[in-house]
Image 1 (cartoon, rainbow over the protein chains, first blue to last red):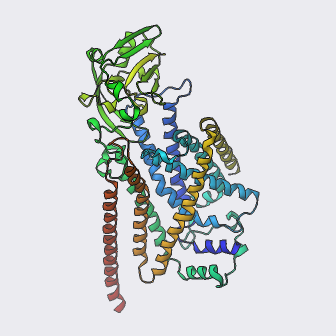
Image 2 (cartoon, rainbow over the protein chains, first blue to last red):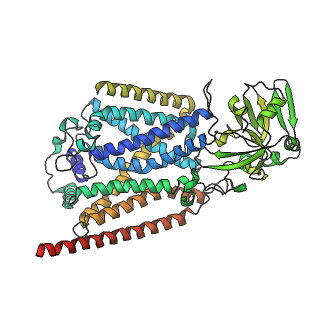
Image 3 (cartoon, rainbow over the protein chains, first blue to last red):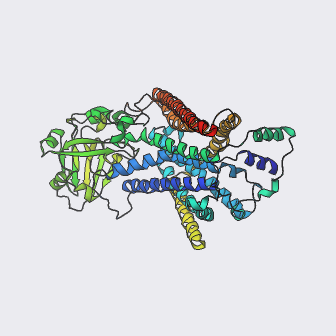
Length: 419
Length: 150
């Protein structure tokens, strides 16, 4: 068994599979993980604020850019993690498989780290494709919990590998006099590689396979192979970002051929996440007797759509920025939320709780901090890009506020309460 | 270094604990088996399917390297890696679109056709890179050979 593992590990040797590659890729992947973690936390807490949390309302594109970075960095993790796993794959066949309790803990923590990381980025990607049926778990909660598992495992992984990271951090320390990557010092090696270090007899099936593999010589120009490896990682990273990031960053729209959203595609040239049919509101939202109720304590007022349209109207340019990463600027028109709040004498520090006609969804109700509720750019929008709001965009009226995720821009408004 | 390592382990364990608490509070225990299945599945898909497949491709390259210059091999590997990773991201879109989407603005593009164009572009670019390399290698040889003869 040990010989088999050793044989596999020998066969898997390759110029790019060295500690320096692992450290260089680890730095990039670690940075990408931290960026997705921080932007992910921002997105989480703006949707589920802890008591007393307050948020910036400017720049208006704050959430748009933050979530665009979250999704784009998440996509970039795919080439990086595959390259990183390629660089360290032979370590899977460590001989002997376990050298002690410490080694068991280390290997278990790496298994957890790798599994959690792969599941985290894959669920994130499939969620942007809205392929929810594949998840035997709730996406949001699981994605959030695993984010901590990934970053926690990352910290432990860095702690365990710190001597190797320090040894190979700088290029001039990592290379020996001949310009080759210095082999891992014996005291930093996992397991005892001498255990199986005997040539395998070329007998038996495994022996023959190894002899055949070893007959395939190692690359003649390892330096070139390493350069080629990093060039390929760079090219793959550039390709996945350039061909998808247009959904979040308009400058790259022309190159967007693979993102799950395309700028300009949807009713009133704006993409839709949840349709009226999906939300089950098509009939009630089109009903002629629709009214919006605004309440503050005992005082309440109702508005028909015509009455809302008769109030002072304001035009604002604000992006719709989805948690799924796509975003698009749009022009909205309607009365200011703060004017409606003032009409029922809501206190200046009141939160606004908006309730949709939509039932039974966690997005049917959104709670808005006072800084958003009083913002002059926050509207009860009646028009979008010069047209009456489309049913799928939230007709008869929806919220639109700066620097907030699309799921909180409640559509098909029914009630607004100052609390 | 010792104190940095201890600090990182403590920080890591703390974050893992937060993840565990979130999992306990927000995810129904009935779903844990599903998460575990995904974990094991992810490891199997990478360690037993993707990585050995990549190994086989490099093995073919190693067998052919007497006939193919190392630089050409590196270009071909790079092209296969870029194409493979993009394909991995795009195939689920093609499948999901076939199953059906809730609105016409979700997965609105023709991903299959775009992927085919992308692969065609990769093949053309790879061929150009190989031709360019061979032309350069030949001109280097030409400039070298007169000097060796003189």
